[in-house]
Amino acid sequence: DRLKILSRYLQRDLRKNGGVVDSVILALWQFTERDLAFVEKMVQDDGGAGTYEIRDFSYQRWGAPRQGMDPRDNAMVQLYQSLDEPETVYLKIDDDVVYVAPHGIANMVRERRRNRCMFVSANVVNHAIMSALHQDRGAHRAFLPTAENLRKREPWTKTGEVNMSPKFQFDRFPASQCVVERWDCAALVHESFLDRSADNTLCAFDFGWYDFNRAGYREHRYIHRSPSVGKEYSSQGARWSTNFFAFMKSDFDGVDWQAIYGKGDDEEEFTGPHAERRDQHSCAVGSALAVHFSYGSQEEGLMAYTHLLRRYDRLSKQLAKKQGE
Image (cartoon, rainbow, N blue to C red; front, side, top):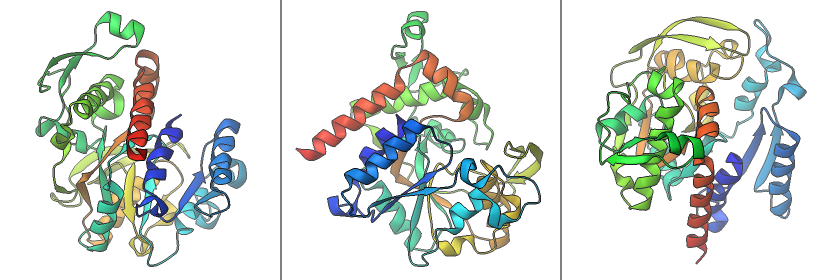
């Protein structure tokens, strides 16, 4: 369902439709037969134009990662190392990105080509660092759910123009509880986004330009968990969520691939130790607004108590229809 929503925005931004995207690599990681059928249909519907390509980096093909394994045998390492065209700007987009602003991808590519930043992130709603920036700008509106809202999975009740509730405080921290751990915090930022989309005030989310490393490379202390190999350790860095970011092949020169096993390890290495070794900052572009639907810990609550995914599906259809008129 999420990829179906994302695919409408990707289709809009293809070069043949006036955008800047030349091709889309559909990287298989964890998938069902239904998922596979959908991506195969995307390729088929392209009519042999070569716009869409499926690459299999699943455990089914590569096997589960293990500590000490050769990086050449690691699916996630091979995923990144396969992106090897030196002049190409690549964008990694999680499949649960459910909104991409018009010209957002183009603006990220322009910023990366300026060479001011190593990695360039979209301006992501429901993000462990940027949710705090949105809060500080007053982009989050005040919403509270009634018992009836939750029972019927209805939109929350709007109670004010700006969220000032102590129940919903967003800290600028890689493992911010009111982002990474709580589904209701995700619901509040989604309600705010959809409400602002409806009244044409999404500009409230636009912070212009943001330096993830403005406080250096070791701003935060936290526990990094690598579920792929059951490993965890204390870490210190300027980590940020890589839900949607632009990069070039050369940006990975010097990466410690041995530190990357699976989900989350790429983010930890790229935005932490690797950035410090390279002594290069990363940034986010405010005009490249995007929405990340859920962290794993938010998923159950969002699906059990809201119809937000359906509402994002409707929005994507409405925007696609408007573009076609």
